[in-house]
Amino acid sequence: MATASEERPVLVAISNPEHAEQLARTAGDLARATDGVVQIVSVVVKSHESPFSVYTDDAIIEQYSGDAQETLDRATSVAPEDVTVTGELVVGNSVSDGLLTAIERTDARALVVGWQERRRRTDAVLGTTVDRLLERASCDLYVERIGSEANGVDSVLLPVAGGPHVRPAATIAKAIAARNDATVTVVSVAGADVSTDVAQESTVDVQLTLEETPGPSVNVQIRLHDSDDIVGTLVDEVADHDVLVFGATRQGALHRRLVGSIPRAVIKRTDRTVILARAGDAVGGPVLRQLQRLRNLP
Image (cartoon, rainbow, N blue to C red):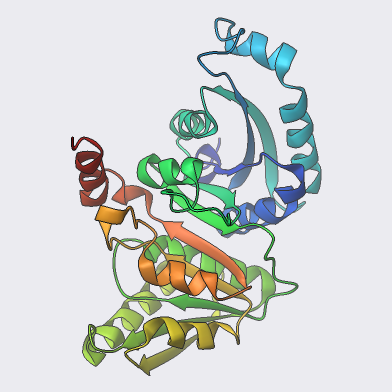
């Protein structure tokens, strides 16, 4: 009989075989902590304008999945060997559509995706595909910056300021630390907008969350700073760590800042591995409703 973990896989979306190992490793960390499984997903896009849009999904996969199948095969070959890994091709009108369908069909516990920074200006926060997943994916979502990969991990930095996304952020921080016998350093910054008591309470809450999160115990350190320059303080702090894990924030919905202005500013100023965590049970809440209202404005 399958366990609950096996019935709810950790999905990892792969579109470029060069990114497969990095993302599959992160998905493996999550699955390992709960004795779960990893399911690698590659999407075959069937646009409305495509000449084979009237074909069945099975026919499209059979006849037109060449690059996607190669990507899936490559990703499966470099996935962690100590967790169960499966692969699947999914057909969708877009990459995000295919991934949302896969989440619903498998009742996934989490989805790991990658993003690459773009130099050109755009209204998107991380890219249109990732933005849509941030807004709509009904499972925990982990977005990892591609290309900035830690060569060994001794310490994971976990900045906290409360909110619904602390739990998934703590989950991935602990999972990475457990695999590497590393330390999770929890940091909170008190300043003009945050009192020392509130900052300290945030660290206490995340300590409890880390203890309750599945997986082996890890070493946890707490750092509390007092500074009005939150971004500068976190940039200085992350220089001493290998991986930076941020929970998404609710700030500035008017400007689609689902990621939050502070995380984005810090990310731009560090070359460390960065993972953004967003809780699945926060989907459909006030942030999404605000964004939907804004899109409907004349």
